[in-house]
Amino acid sequence: METLARQNKTAGENQKQTVLVVGGGLAGLTAAKYLSEAGLGVTLLEKREVLGGKVSAWKDAEGDWIETGLHAFFGAYEEIYTLMRELGTYQHIDWKKHVLTYTLEGGERFSFATVNLPSPFHLLPAAFKNRYFTLAERLTLVKALGPMLFGTAKYFTSQDKYSYEQWHTRWGISKRMLKKMFLPMALALKFLPPDEISAKIVLDVIGIFLRQNKASRMGLLKGSPTELLTGPIADFVRQKGGVVRTGAKVKEVLLDEADPHQIAGIVLEDGEKVTADNYLFALPMHNLKRLIPEKLYETEPFFANLKNIQSVPVISVQLWLDRQVSYEDNLLFSPDGFIPVYTDMGNSNPEYSHDGKSRFHCCVAPAKELIKKSDEEIIETVWGNLQSVFPDGSRDAKIEKAVVVRIPWSVYNPAPGTDKYRPSQETPVKNLWLAGGYTHQKFYDSMEGAVSSGKLAAQKLLKAARVS
Ligand SMILES: Cc1cc2nc3c(=O)[nH]c(=O)nc-3n(C[C@H](O)[C@H](O)[C@H](O)COP(=O)(O)OP(=O)(O)OC[C@H]3O[C@@H](n4cnc5c(N)ncnc54)[C@H](O)[C@@H]3O)c2cc1C
Image (cartoon, rainbow, N blue to C red; front, side, top):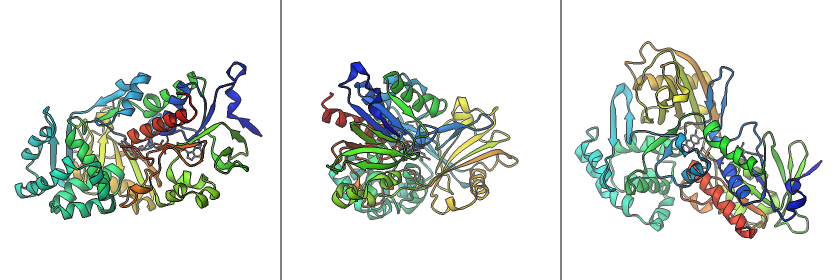
């Protein structure tokens, strides 16, 4: 059976160009939004029954929302807020108090609170007031603040060959700060420890946090991403006449026999063939690599380079407890154990309240080894970590329910030396564009990176199609 995405060309719309967007995560949805808004005939194909990819959420049999991952919005993001404002959904972000709280074994805490001063002065009181690190330790950071604050893009790029740990050690910053402050930061950022993550990405992010007053402020959605973030984008696409299909897995990409630099169509798992004038792939790296036809790997370094980009495993664990053990309405960081960032949704997400009891959502990393273990072992590890950071409150607490979500190929792996392989949104194939956090844009693989990449891909496609 052959379907034309051109099917949404009606009699009066013969000039309408068509686009097939493959992948219904934030990148694909964003591209579909801007393309349908510009008047193109858009069909989006998503393999799962639920949209949203790594931000997807669904209700379980008991009516509880299960999220793929705990998602924080950062003040530094831009394009995702433009998109949300355009859709009227920005008010669904609940901005938390601007403080980074680290929770440690035995119930110990330290935090960095910012004040309303021009950057970088907004962080100075936090640095001086912090008593967890000794003055000598804090002073080791001072020298490194220069390149963090004033480093140019060229300098950050040149540091991609080093791991963050190598960079940290070369600048003589204290080892304890690496373990207690930068380890959870790297793990929360890309689920990788400092010896496996490129120095470039950590420096880029710290640089933004230091340079912009509100950049490190965090927010959470007031409910599920399905209802408050991705659903409204899909609704918009449909209102503009676009088609959003779930349960539609693309199995093969067909090249034009006469011109192998042109896509002729795609084939779905059930054998259905779909064609369009233009194709935009917004897939996770491992799925994209499987779909690229061998001929393109052989003839185009652009595609061969993708083989150098891997993905990082991560696990999400959600625990419903029989009592309240945390009273903090914010994201929390932890250097000890496997929960670098987590929150008690019972306090921080009004829609997810659990009758006043704690409902933890934990990002579990590094997951390379843990992901091979059983759900019971993973839950036991996470619960052990939570008990250790809330020793008093958790003493008699019991787990009422626990859910483990494994994401073996999550964000692309920003290992040292990888940045140069990240592709642009345009490709050497005339009618193919790429979107996704791994493509080149400022915010790496994040919600902002995915939205930016989807918008950039749409803009570039529209320019090539001479629609804008
Ligand atoms: C646990 C976790 C926590 C995170 N926390 C944060 C955070 O706090 N803040 C933040 O900004 N970012 C966070 N991120 C990163 C963020 O979720 C991603 O960067 C972003 O969602 C990626 O969007 P995407 O559209 O590029 O990819 P994806 O979301 O992966 O979307 C790709 C889509 O393609 C579909 N697909 C795959 N193969 C096919 C096929 N053959 N045919 C059709 N469809 C296919 C997939 O099912 C998927 O829906 C987190 C990620 C994870 C995993």
